[in-house]
Length: 397
Ligand SMILES: [Fe+2]
Ligand SMILES: [Fe+2]
Image (cartoon, rainbow, N blue to C red; front, side, top):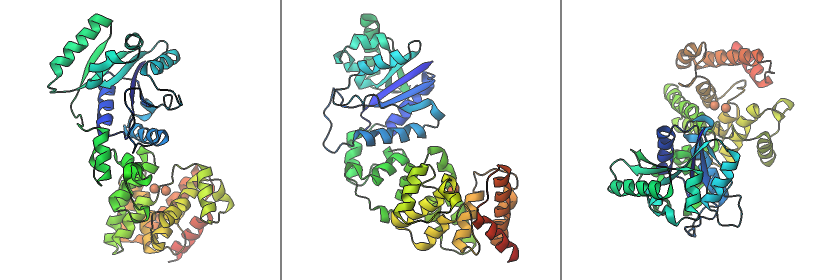
């Protein structure tokens, strides 16, 4: 197996890291990439406005998840956990070598690092433990210097060095990004969920009011709360909900906010969800108490209202988006049906449902509810009473 090892302070991780990591996976045909946030890096002091190890780990995990390579990119906490000591690359490599005795290890780094690698702690041991993949811009002024340096390392120290030509290298440092964030810019250099995480946790001097975020900020924050694979569905729901709101002359802004927020707690554990229910006095029936799937609509609704400043209508639309209920408001119907048949959904009958939603919303709701019951029962699950009541109701209107 070919394993890439990419360390850094990741304070914060940015598009430069992400593009370089993706290029390395491609060019070196890596089977696995480990992103390793540094504990206390030996070669530099951390700036005052730095994020905690926990936050840097969480942001790097969001970046790894966003690389779209399933579990092949993963963040490791082994340097962060080496608490108190300075963290040396050679120790990390020794540790990984023990764990992967027969695999090919590739240590990835920026070209500036390659030029100073002989100054690193036990550089020669590093060359024994791993091959070096150094990122270079496709048209780097220093390319000749880098090539000569790589050759010297190979001849003089037996190192295996490969220069990785990265087309889209984002030429910005984490320091510049931190300064930009402080001025209220810099979003364009960050993977959106990482930017959302920074806003939500008010890192690097950002001072976002969670109850008063712009649509873009709210998108970023909610994307930081879910797995990357969920993002296309949430974007699709937003698109569909706004389109339906236009068609049925409902409040487009409310439809947009409800859609952006509707699944924000989808990946929270049962324990976290129950905690939110307790905090906001959400009463649960027996079915809900054991089902994250049913709980997420209630907890997302609570956070929408109490953390993100949504109004009662938006809260209710999120609250009932999984089960539906009798006599739904127009906004509730729009979110229920948009969630069900947004453009990324693909199941038998979805086109009929899509067409119907623009012709007769109540009939589309009934069809959606009936399809959902068939689906739940085919999996051997119990249908929530709200859904059954809703079916009775919409059959009679
Ligand atoms: Fe949902
Ligand atoms: Fe959803």
